[in-house]
Amino acid sequence: MVPLVSGTIKFRYRTIDFPNLGIHLKSVGDHITVFGFDIAYYGIVIGIGILAGLMMAVMEAKRTHQNVEDYYDLAIYGVIFSIIGARAYYVIFSWDMYKDDIKSIINIREGGLAIYGGVITAIVVVFIFAKIKGLSPFLLFDTGGFGLITGQMIGRWGNFFNREAFGEYANGLFAMRLPVSQLLAGTIVVISAILIIAGRKKAAALQK
Image (cartoon, rainbow, N blue to C red; front, side, top):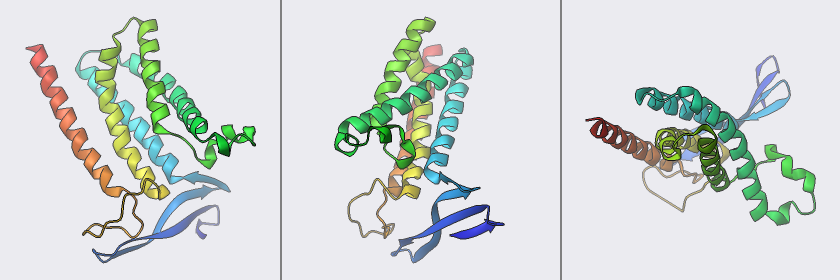
C-alpha cells in the first residue's frame, strides 16, 4: 500500500503488461482507500457510466421535445431496481455460495451483480413506469437506448480495473499479459457511434 496524502488516501497497485507493445504498467490499481474505506475503481467507473448514460438520454429527450423530468424519474427507479435485479439474478444462479450464509446476499461490496438480471429488471421497470405515466414504453426504450449503450461502453472499463471478463488466449499486437477483454470496450465505442448516428438519421427522416 502506497500512501498518497498523509496516510489518509492510499492506492493499491498491480501490474498489467502489453508484451508485444513493450508496455509494462506497474501502477494500475483496483481501488482507492479514503479514510480507511475502500472504494473500488469498478464502482467509480459504473457510477460515471450511469451518469453519462442518463445525460445522453436527457439530451436525446430534449432534442425530440420530450419531458426530461420523466427520464430523471425513470433513472431513479431504474438504477435502484436494476441493482436489486442484478443481485437477485446472480444469487439465484450461484445459490450454493449463499445457501449457508443468507446474510451475505445483501453484501454486494463483495461482488456479485449480473448484468442480465439488471437489464431484465430495467425492461420491466420501463413498462411499469410507462403504464403509470401514460407514456409509450417504446419511445422510452428508443430514447434511453442511447444512454444504455453509453453506460455499457464506459462501464466495460470497470472490468479492466477489476481484472475480469477475460478473453481467450491471444498473442496479437495488443495482447495483454492479463487477458482482460479491454479491446471489447473499443468495439462497443464503435457500435455505439454507429447506432447513435443511425438513430438520428431515422428521427430526422420521420420528422420530414
